[in-house]
Amino acid sequence: MRAVARIDRGAIAHNTARLARAAEGAAVCAVVKSDGYGHGALTAGRAALDGGATWLAVAAAQEARELRAAGIDARLLVMGALDSEELAVALDADADVVAWSEEFLAALPSHARVHVKLDTGMGRLGTRDAALATRLAEAAGDRLAGLMTHFATADELDNPFMDEQLGRFRAWVDPLRERLPDAVVHAANSAATLRDPGTHFDMVRPGVAIYGMDPFGIDPFAHELEPALTLATSVLAVKDAAAGESAGYGRRFVAHEPTRLATLPIGYGDGWRRALTNNADVLIGGRRFPLVGTVSMDNITVDLGLDSGVRVGDEAVLIGAQGPERILAEEIARRLDTINYEVTCALTPRVVRN
Ligand SMILES: *Cc1c(COP(=O)(O)O)cnc(C)c1O
Image 1 (spheres, rainbow, N blue to C red):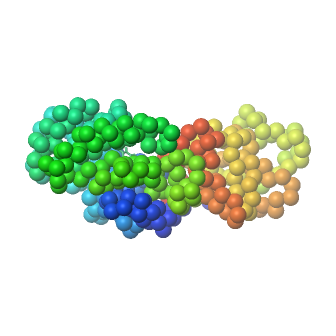
Image 2: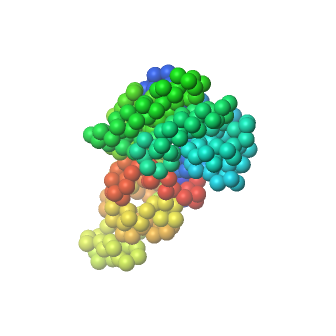
Image 3: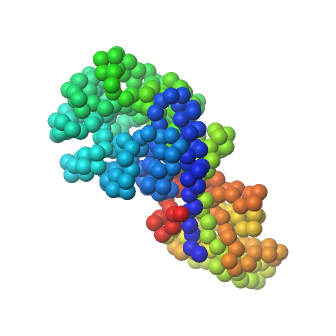
C-alpha cells in the first residue's frame, strides 16, 4: 500500500481537552487551517469539537466554506485577509471575519460578525494603531464579535517579546472591554496557552498542540499531548545489494558491504521531502532502519542489513510509533531544519488520510 496518514481522533479530542484544562474556563477555538495542519480539517475539526472546542478557526474563506458544507455548525473564524470575493464566501459560510481597516469594516453587511485585530508586534495582519482599532471596535456596533491579537514569539521561552506584546494588547483591550463587554477577547496560540494564563482572556486559539505536536518543537509528551498522526506505508520490495552496488538517483548510497534494501512507496510527491535523503529513519518490525539514497518522487530505499527478517508487505512507519520505537514529527523537523508544523502540512493529497 502507498503511504497513509492515520489520524487518531481520540488523540485530537484528548489534546483539545488538555488545552481546555490549561485555559481554565476560556473557550477553545481549535485552529484547523491548511487542512488541519495536514491531518484533514474536517476530521480534526470534529474531533476537536468532541474534545470541548466550541469554535474552529481557519485562514481562508474557502476552508470555512468546506467545513460548513460538511455540516459543521460550530462558530467559525476566518483569520486571514480577505478580498471582496473571499469576504462574500466567508459570510455565506456564516463565519466570523477579522478587520483592521475602515474600508473593510465599511464593506461589512449588518449581519456580519467581526473581530478587530490589533497588531501588537507580529507585524503581519492587524493595525498597529490602537486608536484606529478602538474606533473600528466602536463603529462595528452589533457586528462586533471579538477583539484580538497574535504573538510572534510565544514558542521562545526565553524571549521577553511576548510579554511586551501582551502589555500592548492589555493597554488597548482592558479599557475597551469594559465598554464592549460582549466582545470575545483572544490572543493565545498553543505555546501561549500552555505557558501563560495571562494570555488566555475569553478564548484561546491553539493549532499545533491540538494535533499532539509540541509548540516548543521538542517533546509533546512533556506537555501531556498525544501525537495524532501516524504516517505509514508498507515494504513493497526487498532486494540484495552486493558491496559496491548503489540505490537511487545519483548513487548517493553505495553499499560498502553486502546488505539488503527495502523499497517503500513514498517520496517527495507525497511530501516526504528530498532533503531527507540519507537523513531519516524508518520503523519496520519495531526497529529503526536508516533511509538510504536519494528520496525520489514516489519511492525511498531503506538499508535493512542482513538479519532483519523484514519481508514484503511488512508495515513501515515514518512518523509515529511501532513497538517500543517512535519517530516524532519533531525529529523529522530537526533533520529538515524546519518546524513540526511544516512536516505535517507538507503531506500532499496523495497521502490518504484515514
Ligand atoms: C495559526 C494561528 C494560530 C494557531 O497557532 P499555533 O501555533 O498552531 O497554536 C492562532 N492564531 C492565528 C492568528 C494563527 O494564524
